[in-house]
Length: 122
Image 1 (tube, rainbow, N blue to C red):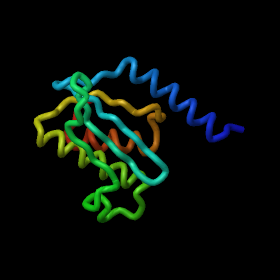
Image 2: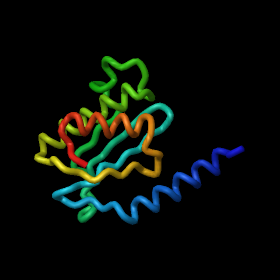
Image 3: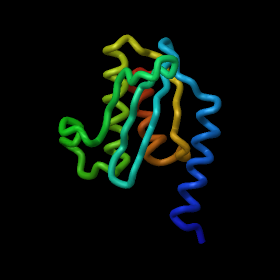
Image 4: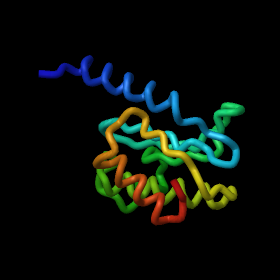
């Protein structure tokens, strides 16, 4: 049986592995995903200067409207659409996805699919 510590250590290892290969540039920023049990947070990051270009989260009151739970795939879809709209408003079309060590499944996949449908390419 896995403990909470074992799962966290495995996620940290996967995240380090992904971050060695994924770098954000001004032309193609990194779409950094963080998920907890209750919320999802997404940022577009330019790693050359260490600057966040845009962000979206279920913590925002505007995104909370119309969704039942902030820890659901429905909320992840709303966050994916919001980050795509904010990226397009800043002239960003292509990004590179940093899933943050999380498996590409469930809420992370729903977020990525919604961002693609809203116009982001990755």
